[in-house]
Amino acid sequence: MSYRNILTNCPSDARNPLRVICHADLDAGFFPPSSHSHFLTLSQFERKRLNLPIDAPIVVQQWNGLIAISYPARNAGVSRHENIFEAKKKCPNLIPVHVATYKEGVEEPGYWDDPPTQATHKVSLDPYRREGSKVLKFMHDYFPNSEIEKASIDEQYIDLTEMVRGKIIERYPFIAHLPPDKTLDDALPYPPIISFAGLGNLVSTREEEDDDKREHCYTDTDTQPSWSDVALQIGAEAVSGMRRAMYEQLSYTCSAGISHNKILAKICSAWKKPDAQTILRQTAVNNFLAPMRFQKIRSLGGKFGETLAAHYDAASVSDLLTVPLSEMQRHFGEESIWIYNTIRGVNSDQVTQRVMTKSMLASKSFRPTVKTVGEIRHWFKILSSELSQRLKEMRGEQDKRTMWPKSIVLSINQLYQPSRSHQSPFPYNAAFGPELIQKHAEKLLREFVASEMKDIPNEHRLGYEVNKLALSFSGLAAVEAGQRGIAGFLGSNSGNSGNSGESGERRDKVVKHKEAKRQRTDSTAAAPSQKKKKKDQPKTGLTAFLASASASANASASATTKKQGKEMTTETITISSSEEENDTDVCPKCKIPVKSTDKGQHSDLHFAEDLADE
DNA sequence: ACATAATAG
DNA sequence: GGCTATTATGT
Image (cartoon, rainbow, N blue to C red):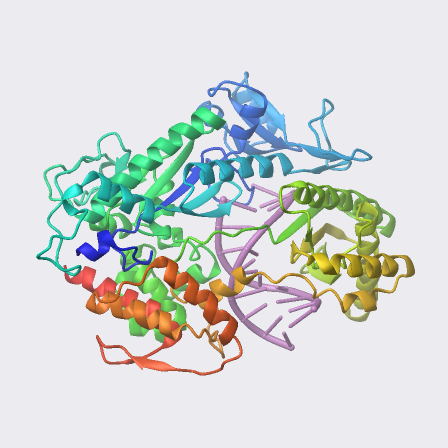
């Protein structure tokens, strides 16, 4: 570790040893019924709404099922897969709360005295979305200069690297300035001994036979810490303060993981729950990861992970550690290197702030199925009203007045059939309301009927066994101010005359968001793509940026600041998207040719190898 | 541009 | 078993 790492603003990726990433997760967030997770609940939201004490045995019910169980109720033996009656028997003082629902003829969702039923009501998750936003806003206020990524309704990734670097300089003045006889690439003096006491669970660097032992809190004060450890310790202090403030200000508890990358931080935050935090140092990574089910790694939890498991007869990370990179690449292609690096604790995925919601969906499933077009149209009213309300609310927020969806999508599930969807442009219309949405939905339904007539067997045709309806907006973005007048005029014109063709051609006058493109071009940030072959790698034009990043990793040479990197990224996007050059460079370290798009991953690989050598 | 799948909570 | 959101991929 050199003075450069401390004194310059290094890029926040796997090659920055002072990178600090936090994953924070509300203890009482959302509990999707299909999730395999056992303990998450959204009961904390309801506890706050109802002003109940922290030990109130709340469960949240949806119809007669349980979708959330508070820790107190869980301690009383209530588990999911039970219905509300069984739960009450187990826990007589249980406090059941039904999720908010839309009731026929009422605009706003609410909590009703009469128990809502699936036949007449529709679940609303709006209250939870709102609370989730509050939590996110709190994070931005608490860490105003850190990049924050909303990972779900109740989870965030926070890049604390820069904030922590500043605090290291403050706290350790003896490295705050480059000594006159040194250069930026000279090694730093050792840090003093530090303590992690009071900062949560510290994953041990020592090997223990059983999981219980590994969970214990070690201070390891007898070992020489690295500056990387110091960075995590300072990050952990900050996160600890954040959690305390969150409880004081919002009365929510959360759990957090602090480590050098997103994958590790995420696994750590789930290590101890509730109301706890876990720190994972680089020297403890192998110890921590090796015995773990590799499917816990984000993006390996699904079908691809199962394929991997079957192919290598592997259950744990250690089972995969023995697979040579080349062998994995032969079978699983480009994404192998991401896996290879990640299971060794090396991962460059970036914490990227996603500014705005890009889509919103309202869906309703039916049990028993819905069988007539009349019923479908009835539910269209409810779904349209919900979307209308939600878009209205979004546009009511500061600076979101111009938000408008590019298109509207109708998807329909019928029994024993895969879900089908149809979409159409949703031109700007000043006369915005439920009726406008409903009209589009019914137009889409007509298209559905027409297309289903062609290829669906008679007895399963639309309107017979509808399982689920979903109406959604996609491509939510700001409409250009100038276009609003014109498009609004054309839009309402088309609405009245039923002429959607003309306005459809003007739909693309929506401000494009550069965010999405930027992510695809950043190969160091890309999670593995799950498909075997991509014919065309995304062309990036990032050669210059990646080359300089790679060089700085290698020779510890040029100081590429984070800011500079961003600017260059933005610049190159505008020039490069049409350029089809397929350039490769020779890696100066191993002398093999590397595609420019793969350079980030490739230098991560050397980083992983260096770690293994130590 | 559109339709669908995969992954996530 | 039910309600969402994002990203990738094939056409």
